[in-house]
Image (tube, rainbow, N blue to C red):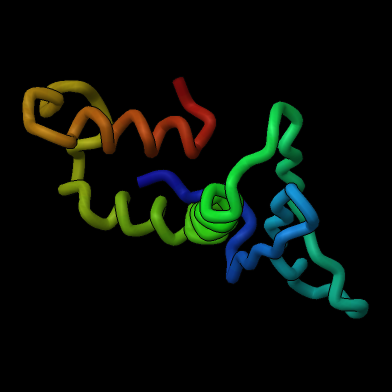
Length: 102
């Protein structure tokens, strides 16, 4: 099992006008510094619901990755031998994408 290299949460999000800002506290920081991921809407205006949904998804991403990994039976995500089962290929590819693997 690979160890996740992303910054652990808790992730939060907030709206900044027509944009979404996802943040996570930086551990060990004396001044409450946060790492931020800014999602700028550049083409047209997204609806209020779409921006809110994007913020929720960004904040939940680390938890979703951990849950997906926990649901995969040991060894099933290591190669494509179980890809004939519904959802297994999608889960394996999503985990790889989140971990920056092809």
